[in-house]
Image 1 (cartoon, helix red, strand yellow):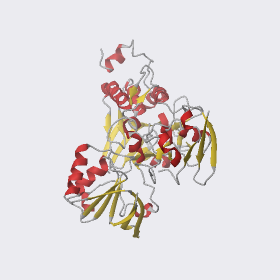
Image 2 (cartoon, chains in turn orange, red):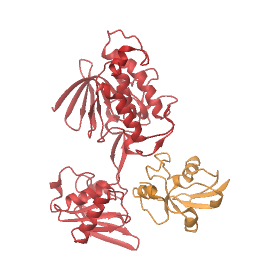
Image 3 (cartoon, rainbow over the protein chains, first blue to last red):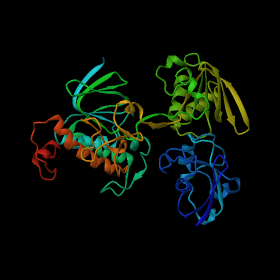
Image 4 (cartoon, each protein chain N blue to C red):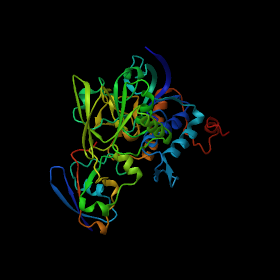
Length: 106
Length: 341
């Protein structure tokens, strides 16, 4: 299990014990984190599971691949730390990861 | 009234399930017309995941959305289905003779004995970018498609997006508009290299502007756009404009289906599990658009629903015809229809 914290837009923190190999999006949905819609169910086809990765973690989490960058074009208020949470896989390397939910999904 | 088309069956939606319905209905000699808002068959397989592999189609360990669509088109080719693309079904009413009248936004009217709604997640419609207050400008100075280029003549046009639509309209409207500003959040595009190169050449000549950033605010009165604020990494920029064309892809909306008087369950059409018929006799709903206890949104479930629907539909179209159920493996008459005998 890996510790994951998802901060909702209103500041409420969700501390989650996430299974390695699962995606951040799946953990958000399972724990009913508000503001993660995940309309397409994790196919990297909709950009409604957009999150901001905490500055301290951006390097470890890495940057989006080409397909994810393309999908981010459809997200709202995209920043340099933006990722689609369905494309971030939980692993021991990411123990303690913090991501933030944006004001809204597109 | 526009063109009148009379047929046995109208299928709303040309995704995988709508396509397979043609096969099941075709075995009983039923003629099908399919209507779809996209410009090609395949539905979500074509629009959302053409290249992505699907792993749960029986007997296909791995097949892409495009391949599945191609295979289905090949499979139904013997039944010569008629396709009507780029149109949305707007109206569905029952006629006095018991048939249905289906109208589209392309001024066609279909009359059919059976209507099969295989509309998936609804119709694909342009995605509204999350810019505050954009609704007030829509259809007045903000448009999601170009119906007539003349509407943009001598206008200061802002085009938003980085895909083919954004690039194509930047190139096409450049000679017509007074000015064009293309706004995209990054310097890379999801468009054909040729269009990107042409756009960069126009920018080089000073014929268009290109700004990297995201539109954060619109300014204007009574729906008439005056300026837009672009949020950039190092601040904000306000540009004057009179028209805006945002191209943020497509999203699925139930659309006019909600107004047809059918019983719904959370935006899905309620059906029985014997015939997949809606609350209106003669109107069936199959695939992702329907709901019944235990429903699972899988393509293969839609295929099953199509097969059972066809059994009920043939009895409505030809109530007096006695039909013996036959298998395609052994029936010479079915094989003749499939063109293999």
